[in-house]
Amino acid sequence: MARYTGAVCRLCRREGQKLFLKGERCYTGKCGFDRRSYAPGMHGQGRKKLSEYGVQLREKQKARRYYGVLESQFEKYFEMANKMKGITGENLLTILESRLDNVVYRLGFAMSRPEARQLVTHGHFTVNGKKVNIPSFLVNPGDVIAICEKSRNSAKIKEVVEKTESRIIPKWLDLDRNTLSGKVLTLAQRDDIDLELEEHLIVELYSKN
Image (cartoon, rainbow, N blue to C red; front, side, top):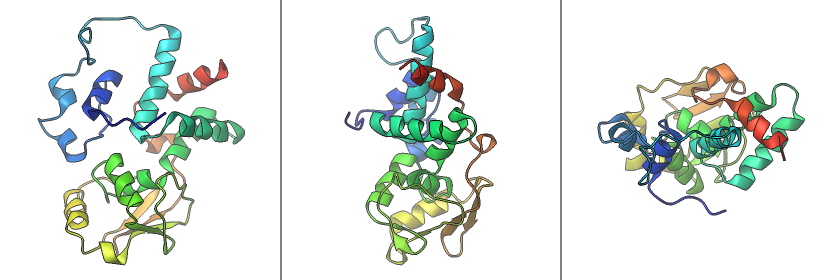
C-alpha cells in the first residue's frame, strides 16, 4: 500500500479527532478539523452506527495515521508487540513512540511527524554520533539523538526549534537546547502517550485474523 499523499486534514476529520499532521496549522484557526469536524464526503454529516469490526478498524487506522506508518509496517509492529512481555496494546504504542521520526517530533525538532520523517530522510539527524536517515529506526534507552552539525545553521531547522520552544517534552526524553540534542531516558509508557486511543480494540481486531 502506497503512502497517503492527499489532503491530510481529511484524515483527522475521518477519525473524528486532531492527529496533528500539519504542524503549526493545527494550532491555529485555519485547522481544517476545527472548521469542519464532521467526516469528509457528501454523507459526512450523517450519523452512521459502526459495527464492532468497524469500531476496531477505526482505532487501528487512527493509530496508523497518527504515527504515519504503512499497513505492512503496522502489522510488523503488532507482531513484535505480541511477542513481548506485558500488555500487547501498550507494547504496540511503546514501539511506535520509539520510531526515530516520532522522537524527533517529541523533542521539538519538527512541527509534525510528517515533517520529522522528511527531515530524518534528508539526513539531518544522528543517533549516538552516527547519521541515521531511516524514519522507522527504533531508538533504545541511552540513545542520544542530535541535529547534525551541518544542519544546525539551516534556516528551516532554526525556525522549527524556535517555534517549538514552548512544547512540553515527555518525561521519557531529555532535551538539551544548547547542544540541540536529546537523550532517551527510558521507553515510553502508556501514561506518557497523549493519543486518545483504545488500543485494546486493535488487539481484538488482529486476534480475529
